[in-house]
Amino acid sequence: MYWAGPTHRIAAAVHPSVLAGALEETSGVHDIELTENWNVTDRNIMALLIAMTTDLEEGSPAGRIYGESLANALAVYLVGRYAVKPRAPMTFRGGLPEYRLRRIVEYISANLAEDLSLAELAALAGMGPHYFAELFRRSVGCPPHRYVLLQRIERAKQELKDPRRGILEAGVSAGFQNPSHFARMFRRFVGVSPSRFQNEQV
Image 1 (cartoon, helix red, strand yellow):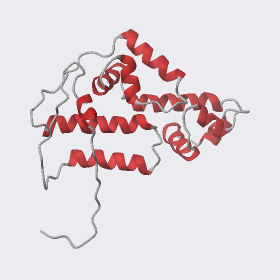
Image 2 (cartoon, helix red, strand yellow):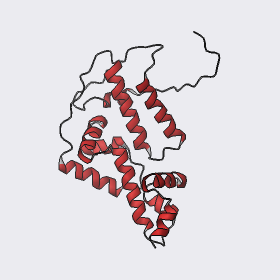
Image 3 (tube, rainbow, N blue to C red):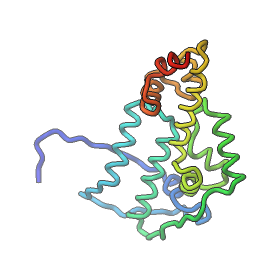
Image 4 (cartoon, helix red, strand yellow):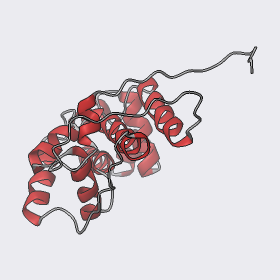
């Protein structure tokens, strides 16, 4: 079959360490091999790659933690669907222990202005990225990248309640390095622009 029209392609390379991180951290498996496939249409892979591409094209407004979360999801799917040696899916029970969750939440709050990563949060919890992300989601009701984004929005709202605080300054303080990304995310979650929100506080 030949196609005469334009095509759109996405090339992606997955580092072996990302695949290893898709397994439970106690598994100790580092020789993951994927089956070779040609002419396979996999909508799950395509959806993740499109989400990654969109995030990059938009300047990664949520920071690297979202990109890492997408990469983690892709690795988990690849290992589960295309590994040469099938891996039993992990089962998750409960959530993070209270002391670990408190440590993570306090760390996020103290470092909101930084470009937080899934890897560093997982390391702080003493877990692999996939295992940590799933237990965190069970504990707080949303994945780490969304929790961080919501905390940044809340921090920005608190900053904007001070009429002396500039819009750009409030966004940077909350961890938004790009003003347009800040305005877009703020409007999406709050329903109004940062400037209007601040004006309504007077």
